[in-house]
Length: 550
Image (cartoon, rainbow, N blue to C red; front, side, top):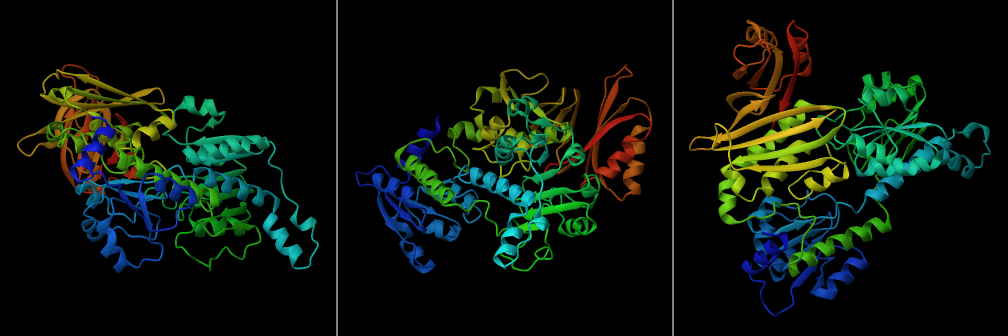
């Protein structure tokens, strides 16, 4: 079933198969081009000045609604929209839309994820130049009646090295632009293939420390997660070159601001450019008075072109949803046949967890290929959602935006990650089996699982080529080690010393051989990397990884 067919069926199901032109509400000003596009196809009404009471009273009159960030599409408001078939969001985030409520009603939610990437990259380059040449400080000095040429002497970008931490769409656009200034670029992002780095003429760093050691300027373009909060901290600054300059045009909180202040005070960091802050809006900040710090009030996405582009792109999605087209930026799950969906449902969380586990075990310097194999009876079904679930698990938390069932494939493609799907109607020892393999840094990391029992609970069935059966849990730690007695006890002892409670454990080995064995342990809390490293340092252990599956 194609996405276009799905949209048509949704429209017919919700009563859209009528002769009247659909009605669309534009709740906020999204720019002239987007409004004009909608007016070509539908009866359009604007409600720029409507209050919540008016919106709640009128929302039931419309087949589609187009919003920006101010309108909150709550579950109650969505429930009142009896005719609604699509919610368009003119921008990237959909935090102001109750997506699960919309999905339950069969309403498509679509955004404009590409609308501000150019704007954000250009603002990064603008701040880079301002930082290198002290432009804001010189402007303020001159307009204050001073002529201080020598005070604001800057540095050239030619032959300097820009380090990019997070090499997604925006990072790649920044790299393309600064190479025009004759800069060398080194980037770190393990979720981009090595070949893609070569295509862009960018040096691939094996780890983030290599970026810190080489770069004259460093810009960070990571998503905001618990793992990336304070990503650039005091330890990171200590690894950087003296006189480095730092930029953050991504998310507030990615840089430990106290550590940045200390690094500026000590002279370790020669300057910083900041567009985003942990709390916004803000007019008071410890770094605002620093002569070598350039700040802007979150302007990364603020251009007339970006606003207009977001409105037009989201309007395109509304048109597609209401005319039976392909909604390419939908953020809720695309539908498959009802029969297949019923059979696939228990395998969706399994596929996502296996994707996250395989990627967590890889942790290489680059990801080149992700294979999703479906074996047994599920191979006869429409497995598109399972493939997407694998990608959502593998890439989730590592991109600039939230990864979902629609954009996961695009994220993989733009990073040069090859995605392969395999279907085999027979699965040795199992009725159904899902196997995920990640190729990273010249190595191959494979995990497999199935569902078991009347409740169809997810079980881990294979890691690193060793078979066993273990209920999947949120916190999984995997060790590879020499197959000799006493190794299980060593793990338990160290965990006990650190107050870590083991829920379950299992060992996979090849009987009659002295080959490596695999131990998988689930715990009631995440296992800190330092504890894993302590165990791996013991005699006989080869490696270990702890992965939180959520």
